[in-house]
Amino acid sequence: MSDGRLRSRRRERGHLLVWTAVFAILSMAYWALAFRATGDCIRAERATTLRLSRDAGASRALAVSVALLRTGTPPLSPYSCVVAPTGGTRCVATFTQDPVDGEVWRVDIRAAVPGDELVLPAAPGVF
Image (cartoon, rainbow, N blue to C red; front, side, top):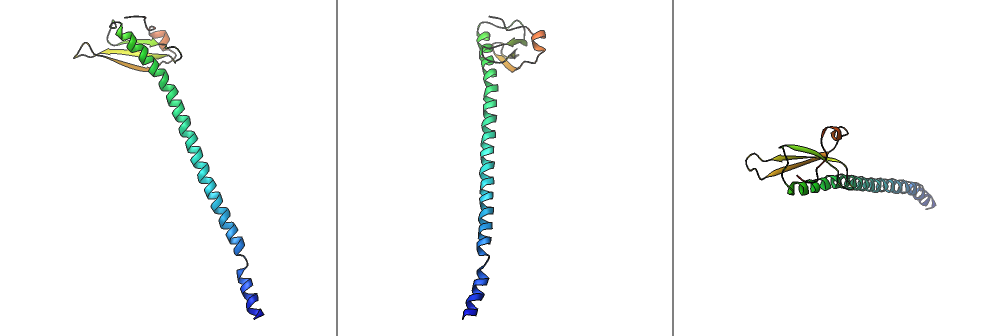
């Protein structure tokens, strides 16, 4: 009987080490998933913040351009000028008259490049 107990004890040895290794591997896998999800959230938030900051400048420039268009019509179609809204980046506004309906204007906004200030006029106060 003592020989049977000895054999059963010898078979049970090593289970604790296996369970510890499995638990350690599962813990590391869970940590990796949590770390990845956190990194994805941070990257998404950074991209959203950057997009909103870029869109804010273009939205302000579009608002200034539409307000300028309400004062009158541009002298030419298409007419481009550099718009510098307060608190925003410089943008180029292009006003294009619809060929079918002369009362409809299209306003396109793009970010200004360094050479635009030399070639294009600044936005006038009124048309």
